[in-house]
Length: 121
Image 1 (cartoon, helix red, strand yellow):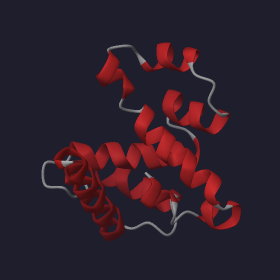
Image 2 (cartoon, rainbow, N blue to C red):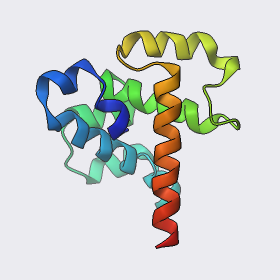
Image 3 (cartoon, rainbow, N blue to C red):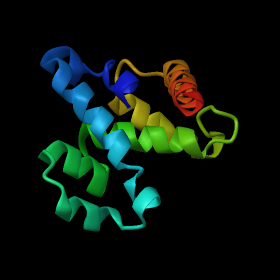
């Protein structure tokens, strides 16, 4: 999420805030699987900024678009954008100028490498 957010126009205009929020959205998006609560239950307990809340609750805003893109990448068994969701993926990438299929896949590879190295430590 951080790597993708860095390429958005909002990050270029607003600096580090969006990138930090993207990291938070990425981490919090895993919470339902980790603790067994629904996202709405989790969000009622956490004081997060509106953009983070909206991304996690409704997949809206730039952070929501980034989260949707990441989820599409994660669903793909070939570590590339799913072909069967081409129209949806294409529409998302149009809303995220600066991010293309190659860059998104590169970010996925870097994130998986980072996570794998964490597991080794």
